[in-house]
Image 1 (cartoon, rainbow, N blue to C red):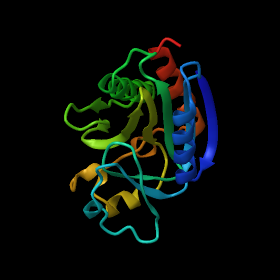
Image 2: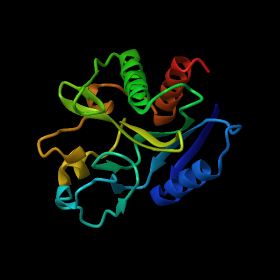
Image 3: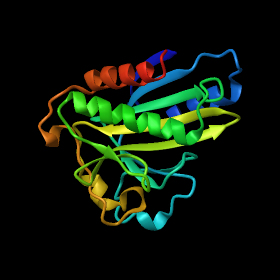
Image 4: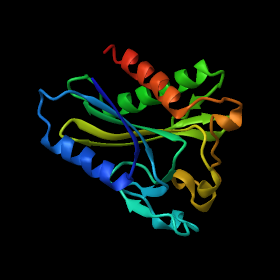
Amino acid sequence: MLIRNLGRQDYTNTWQNMQRYSQERTNNCLDQLWIVEHDPVYTLGLNGKREHLLNVGNIPVVQSDRGGQVTYHAPGQLVIYTLFDIKRLQLNIRELVSLLECSMISTLAEQGILANAKTDAPGVYVEGKKIGSIGLRIKKNYSYHGLSLNNDMDLQPFDQINTCGYSDLKVTQLSDLGVNISTDQLADALVRTITTTLSI
């Protein structure tokens, strides 16, 4: 497993680089985790409906090829992209989603935050508010895109969309729950949990 901390990156460039790696990789290529923070951007999933964009102002909107509806990325949010050969890891898509949810839940528990997943709405929640999101794409048994976990960011732009396609869904973050941790420290903890779960 190759771990790449890419720092702050433009969303579209990173997405195109993920696509390129996934298209060009072979069975011998290493799986990778890319750690990033993005400039402010709204992203729509493959089936994302523009009606869920309410008042986006001057924040750019990118139509992506991941699963899911609309979400928001910005500095202070941890994003980890999972460039995996899921056949080699003996995972199906549902198992990969569950692995990422459980990894976020375990990492939050280390910080004293009780979180949970929902069977009908992928992601991670604290008292009904969403703190972690998952959006994936699988092509030829290779996964890309991944997860986002809200740490210490401006959450106001979430009010300008129907987050994940739900008009009444609220969001939260670690800093609002009394946890003061750098995004790099949070990344280290979450990557450790993911790789331990995969036994890599």
